[in-house]
Amino acid sequence: GILIYEMLYGETTFYSENVQIMYSYIQNRQVPFPSMIKTSPEAKDLILGLLQKDPKMRFGQNGDSREILSHPWFLDIDPKLVLEKKIVPPFRPDLRSLENNFDQQQLNDTVRDSLESGSIADRTKLKNYE
Image (cartoon, rainbow, N blue to C red):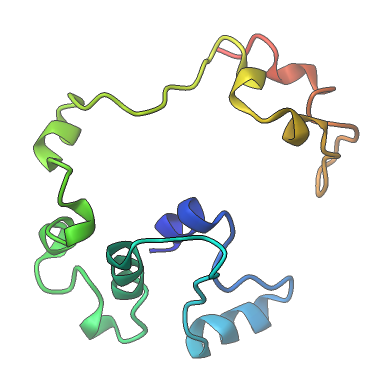
């Protein structure tokens, strides 16, 4: 649920720099759905089901992954084809030049929370990545 949420909204659900506060948020807050990002009712329902606070009510408790994969959000996905790696992804990153996979603004952002300083584009480790 957290991974799907982060992929759709670009942020985590209950983040706080203070770990104890974050744990409190996880236990006591409802999942926030920012209105500025349009998300399908099926995606929201899946996220809520996966992040259900009561483990007995959480998706996957009554049928393991089959229960999760039978959710309407996965309606257009054939799990067998996914496992056999027969689905063509809508986007394939260019591994020869990682910079081509990012917005120029992101590459120019200053790196925070890192031992290295400077912009991401300045870091030559991204070049010729294979």
